[in-house]
Length: 526
Image 1 (spheres, one colour):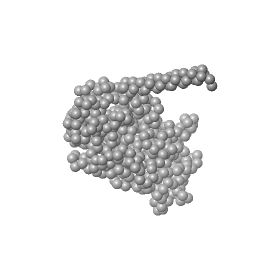
Image 2 (tube, rainbow, N blue to C red):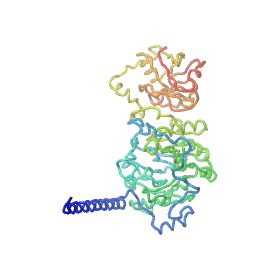
Image 3 (cartoon, helix red, strand yellow):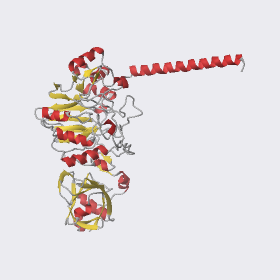
Image 4 (cartoon, rainbow, N blue to C red):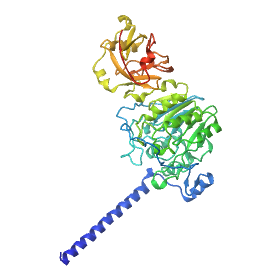
């Protein structure tokens, strides 16, 4: 190559490098402008504000908040790491949702709780509405695309949220503090109860400072006539990598003259639960984090078994598990948190409520909200508040089954065959048994039943029958329906909202036939 060509090549190379450098500079400036201007990222405290934090709590120093005890965000895993489940994202329609039209009025001395999915809860206590960690967007991220997509429907749009007395925020992570939700509901919010530092985000988003009440750990204050106390947690904060630990993370105890409710927020297990009991006594309701855990995150998220122990520590009358079935942040199967916590709770005698998303549970009516709905895929019938198996819904729409009266057919018994052993069951007289007999007239029905800790076995009939939603005290040998298409065979006792179908006449060999695992049963006319 002669000198002339070398010079041309050199000039081309220099221009290429300068061009790439210019594009990189423009790109970096664009990123900087985006980060600085994009409101969902929130805001950081000033140096003056940080000095105020230092004066207010011993856990703020070196420009950030600290946990009470030594804390490691990502621990070294001992033994097998958490497995990456192929079912961590629910299938379409697998998580049933009841659309919320309105919230009931709550009397003094009572509480109502409505779960929106993940940690978003509408708590009503003594006539006041407290909206906990409201996230009503499709994504739990600073942008509404990409990662963090919601896997369950919203029970109510953010634009439909009525006036709430208090929005309570536990920390500033995107799955607990959502910019779009705050913007949408702020006009209908009376006050905000937040940990120190979270107010910086709200102020940037236009929330009036006189509506915001900040808390350091163990600080108490009265807001809208209710007492709030911030409880320490083992977690962290931050909406950008360089803003970690610039705001506090808290649980809260909400206290009235006659009731105490504890929301844990995100936290690892620690001695603060025993401290809560020592300071306040037993809790009427505990809303506990349960989900999106990993063995490597053992210090900042509880395993389900630890959540049960936390409930025992505070001697909670009733426990509502949250932080699951909405956003995928960990590797476990989407329903595993519910499966594990209910199993452990049954062993330890802890009362767990597991409403579907959108259902409201009242303090005096918890029995019907303790069922393992996550075992089956359902499609919601809004009018009847029941669930119809997706695989047979189209068949039911095409075919109208003729209803026959049991008395006219003189059918009062059915056969229940378990592992080739036949048992006779006496039918109840109700609409469900009429429809069941009609179905069995076409032939026997074989059903796979999943075992739940040897207490009950649950499976899908595949056809929706009419339920009365009445409270039934079950005894061993009862065959009952729940929500139209879930057949339950009881080996233990409880009182839930069921429609009773039949009762096994002679229980000899019944328990042995059912065994301790999953079973297949066949129903047929006697």
